[in-house]
Length: 301
Image 1 (cartoon, rainbow, N blue to C red):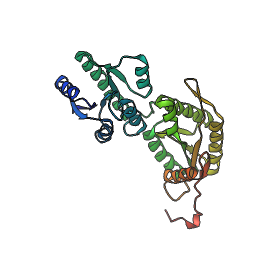
Image 2: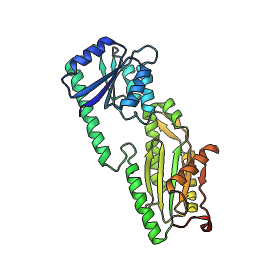
Image 3: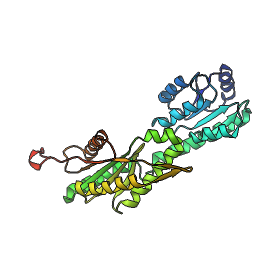
Image 4: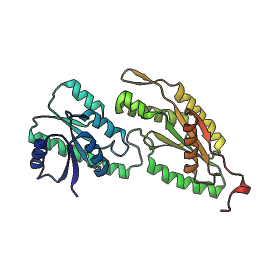
């Protein structure tokens, strides 16, 4: 199956040129004429690579890239900027927004094809690794796939052994503002730093995972919800008191936490999520526990 390339450029001449030069490559090329339609196409097609013009009327390439990287669906799609400028500052700005590479217009076609091939090859290999790996590439934590498998096993063990099991859901408050203020490299650094803090503060037997986006999950074997809440409060206070840094800037953040244990009538993750949403609604930077119903009110298994 050919890999998909989305070209976002307002020049019909560039469209024709890329169509001609990439026709012998094993790719399927789709074009968008401006930023808004490019964002729509990116969300629909989920291409393997985006070639993005910097200088477009209305929404320029930098803003398009910022929005792509802010969207969970499209943030991992590699972006190569197409630009007529060669200033270092502009290139740095694009790379700080999360772009993979730059190609300067008028571009050499052999160089263009080589850069496209290299980026698509890397994207393909990373995609294969992400499907097979259980490690989150950004934070080094266990990923969502591992969390789901491990939680299923721990729930089964808890039921057989009649031992407690808890789940902590943690979400960074107002994380979009971090990305807006410090760019996605700044946001990525915060995610790595929070991941490190969580691992350092948890017990060896706790399973710390990146659940997705700016959300983390912790499985607490042999732990009732009250014990998990005490751990979550230590984590909340530790994050609140920590001064994070990125490129000389000092960044303060807070996190909200939702707690549930295996005694809840709903699935443990759903229960912890409900507690997390309640923490968000009640002002953030707090810990909420989903209370289990008394045994007499719970339906028979």
